[in-house]
Length: 558
Image 1 (cartoon, rainbow, N blue to C red):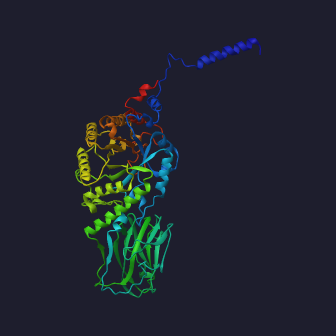
Image 2 (tube, rainbow, N blue to C red):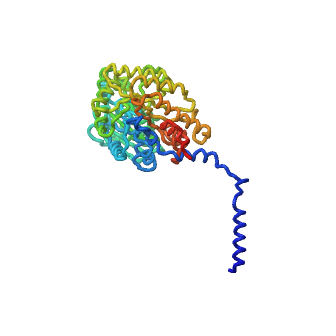
Image 3 (cartoon, helix red, strand yellow):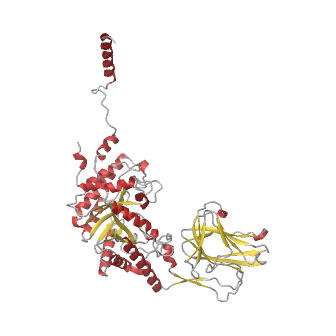
């Protein structure tokens, strides 16, 4: 290339370059508002770095997490370990999660979690020992039954082998990835038949089968009777095998965790051969006991399920609490140094009294109210047991929700703490859950902290999260609402630091660090977290960090 051509090309490139360059005096593009807002949030350090250890010695900054998410050791595990120094399992350390049908505890997964957290330098807060929900209520209710009172005059022939005390002769089952076995949880005698299946289709897609003996059953009228319960609400029907009129179908039977007696009148025209329990429509685990097929009799009296006296019920349920807390605390004490001993004791409608199952139209299948059998002293018993079997320096809490919403409930809880201690229990701390929305009254928040601090107890924000309110889900949340959420997070934490003396600040647990998934059982689809579902930070992260630091950290960024 000649010097002339080179010069020409360079000149041309200069002109093109100038043409492609923006004229900064006329085309200044502002960053989108979302980028401008989030840029400083992403410059914040890990949350736990904003807790001053000198001003807050021993402060626990916690996160709620599921055992599966933590043990997967994925992004959630790394995010929690980086930002928090304490975790609380939402479900897996509760009675319903670890107490099996025979009353034994299975803590294999819990112990593995505790070891993993310890290796990561993260402590675990025990949640929870004495609560009415998330219970193995089927097991506890089974303790209150003494058996069945049968009609002593009933000498009718029984055409089935249905006691399950000796063998399963004549019984079979199939379909729905089902399993069938005999377990030591019988209502009559000591054993019952257990059937578990996963079908959710036609009734006949999962069946328990029983051949009558002798077969066929002689012509006549008969009563099929049995006792049944299930681990969760269930449904099935019975049907018979034969030809013509001997094929019969029962109306659906609705089951619960409590044993019930069922009768079905059928006829034999001479070809009645077998019975089917058609279980396919509702997956679950079902229990059968004392199945009978007898000739129908108008003189026969239905059996009665026997109940214990109130005194005996109190003795037995007290023993069940003793066993549960003693074993749970003993097996976890090398790792767990703090517990929610009594959880959510106060009634919402009558906030100065304890919750009760009495008068409720519906009791969930996992609900069991210790206080209905042990009285007001159930909390005394629970604290004494936790103290007896735990470590000498364990920190034991009572915990409840809506204390900032209903100050009378806060007063009721404080009064109950006084009752517990007057009757020999030692309560170290009070947890306030603080599941809030943007319309939560700030003056109530302030007053609650003052009231709790005045007790002299350790005070913990135990399950904090803030939604937008009125069921607003993530897609409908506006930038202004996200900003208000961040401001409220900062306000609550700042007031906790201001109004609760340093020696009483146990710590803060963020119950849902991430926004709730649409299918979640907790505040489904609500933007309650500090992180979005993709683990990107929200403005709430900055507000939370500012509250911990006691200053606007972002003002220091340049």
